[in-house]
Length: 351
Image 1 (cartoon, rainbow, N blue to C red):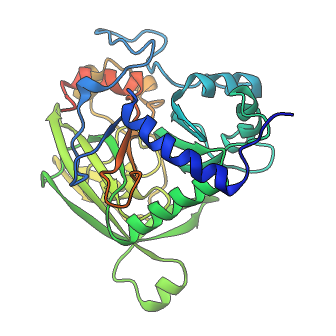
Image 2 (tube, one colour):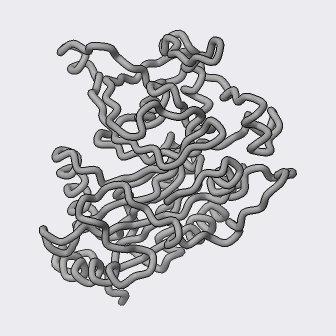
Image 3 (cartoon, rainbow, N blue to C red):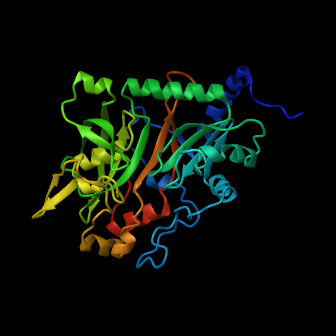
């Protein structure tokens, strides 16, 4: 019979080997003590097909996206190819943009194919579960575990870090517009509101106690501008709270929507070159409008720009060390090919 790593003692025993193995691994490095924004682009391993090319983009303007209408088998194959690290019960994926983690019954999601992915990775009866993941519209790290005790320990670590306001996730974003400040905090009360048949995240000014009880949440993110060029910015974002579309809405509040944000960018209006916020409740989602100069820099036609993917990538994730006082372990996911190409077109560099 196949030995199954299910008992709690077996999971605990393997954790020490997992952490020490990661410290020796190539895909993961130990993080600095301040757990700040430092990311070394030269240490990233780019996936196959990510080599950058200059000039017009032709019929495939956004390399690295999942093809439409994938079968379950094709999605499992794509996810297996997206594995960036595997140690003990933990599996790390670099999720493609546009793939939902969860969804309605019958929808093709990451969660719906975890049984097949577990079998494909040779885990037998040890079915994977999601520990941490980037959202549907964003790309980047997904942490999976085949051991419930390991998953529980990591989830407690993330919850404790959030309460202590210690960021564990770092996103990279390209913004249409340059934030006024080079770094800082973005604080906003947010709520979900059903508008024209769609659930949208809406800011709430001066929320009352009743608002908080009814689902309004005070949210907080750190940001730092890494590079600027052509009226755009490469920004690193660290959410300290969790709310639907938090980072997208936070950047809209800075008048710098994320490139490829076709849901919230319309809330930023422009008159005589000056940007301002439009009322969130009355502004319907629409395709992001980019000026002609930016389209030329990106080598995109207006019809291609209407399909521009969201440039928001969960690039780095911190995990606890073997012991409480150990330096956190750092997971890295390379940027998608279309994201890297956008940086090249705009002359932006991830230092």
